[in-house]
Image 1 (cartoon, one colour):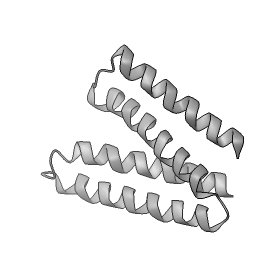
Image 2 (cartoon, helix red, strand yellow):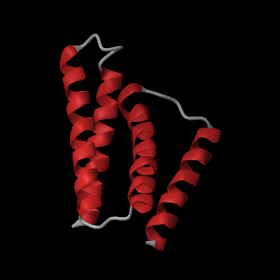
Image 3 (cartoon, one colour):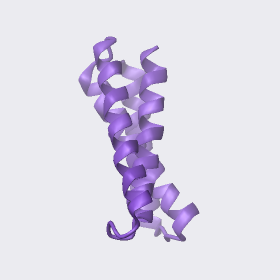
Length: 105
């Protein structure tokens, strides 16, 4: 159950962060509302996962690391962002960290 809550929380976080980018500096109100909703849902789901027994260090590490990686990839897919070799190495290290934290839990 905690894993599903955590995954849903990451998905909501990435949706919210992507909507922030689409909001164009808070000029597009619909995207602002979507961003706030996504972030709010993400925090609520993370809170439920923690309450269900997910350790904070594991949950937050995965939540933030997976969120950073997925948001970066979302920028590439939806907004044409370019990632350098250094960016990709950094994201790979984040993924390795998330896998390590999850595996140690």
